[in-house]
Image (cartoon, rainbow, N blue to C red; front, side):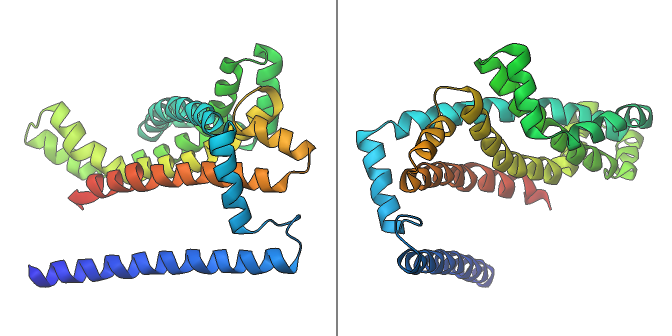
Length: 257
């Protein structure tokens, strides 16, 4: 048992050291590139960090990130909820799969910008249109992942539960759902990365607050330092969510393997 613990600890330390080393290398390359090119065109990491501090305590960085994060969260959960339901339905039922496959392909290839513009034109420049546009753009990707997950479920295991007359709720939570966990987590990870990028476009085009709106203002003034400051501030928030929520959830849900 002690050997196993030492092995796991060593692997974790090695992975952690590699991540830290790659981050330090990235910052060093960035610092050198900013000096070689032009600090006004490519601000240095220290300059961006100073800008983050300035916007955080003297500006509205915190409120802008909170507004954008709220839109990300609402859109994410709406897209995940409907996407999981439709994806499992298509994966389990061939008739539904055939009926909806054409619409799924259409929605996958519909440009995000077109969806955003249409939602604003149809529903106005309001919060409902913004959240709806983001959810629609994320929804088909969740459907694709969950459909493949539902198709990959081991039907022999389900037949075993029927033979032993296992209650349906236990079959669902103990046999069926665990086989979908990898696809759920893949949808969550890709969804979080995609949704916040689309939210920024939505805010840039039709909202008067949030990180995307602020980036539009900085763009007009060619303020590259502030653009990078707001961008990296929100990236840091998303990374914290990944480390503190999604990664532990991944380890917990995949323990059965």
